[in-house]
Length: 455
Image (cartoon, rainbow, N blue to C red; front, side):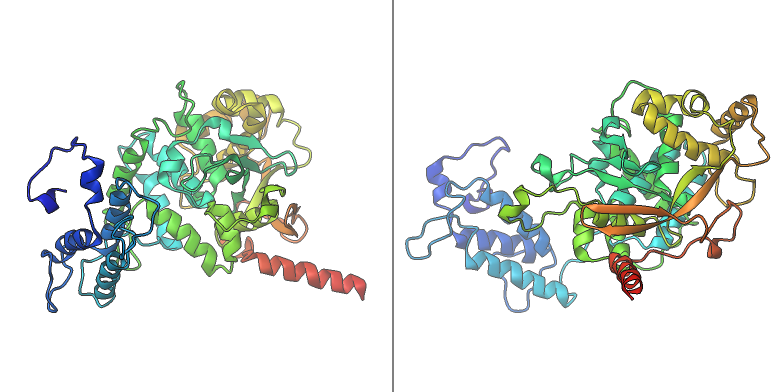
């Protein structure tokens, strides 16, 4: 309105319906041209060097919210309707897009997807950060869970402890329910999703979550990652410091930010051969719905688990399993001594599962990984608790067992590969696990097995 009337209005000005009805598509186009080209009537040689098409598209939606006939297509004959819903306005945006393709517009400030190698490099730098205190454990957990769930940083800050639950059908894995995702508008859009451990410790969501909760959540907040109001800003500032660190090696040009994690996870899953439908489900993106979807349970464990498997990294998923005969590893040790804070925040069942993870990490021989699995105080506390319980600290009572995902739709089987690949914590990385690349590969193995039995 300020552009049309040639005068400035205070931000709290309320315009009459009559004044808003006078706005035409031509007025909107002149304003958009001024925003993009710097002049309301750009000539043939003009270039959109002031604003991008995405800025104009957002402005189009913003203006549309205030016009009286918001849902009515613009009628060029009767000169009424929503002026932003017209061919003239769309043509301006398309013109600016064409200049952007030719590199004649404003350079994009969008964040590119982070590469997997960059992601691992970032996690290593975060955990090695000096002078950050417990914050580095918070950020490590945020990043690994954000990657594993293909979600936004804003959604992570709204995550509560009650969002996690034990997986009754598949113990040694957890369930998480994200209710604040951008595209969630009803309860059916927020299914429970599986969390799997990884054979690559830096990206293991269970290990990072256990360390964070046990080390940094002794307060009374019900939110997993602290204040939902400013927690995302803290993480963003931390990440910008890491991205600017000389030790962080960018593999390609482009801006990186918190949204790079969601883009990176989706891109990595696609490159690994995961079908788009599986990625849509894992990332909770809005999809076309039909009537039958109302009657079918929206929880599809198999596609979700296949996506989670891919996102555990090239080494694949694993279960943390207590070795046979380890009688010193009791529920009391795991729940009340190793993961007492987790018990207080998340309950006894989750404390037991995550306690096994912490016990494994505390007894991994020094130098096995070029990565500090546990903070020294937590590591010492767990080792002392196990020793006091009569355990032999020279032998790790927990092993990591690779997992293979099979099934279809709502049917899911998580098969522990004990005989095929009995992994010790000191085995070379290249011998640990073959990557479960996609759901199609699992289906092909199942089909070939059925054919052999039929033969």
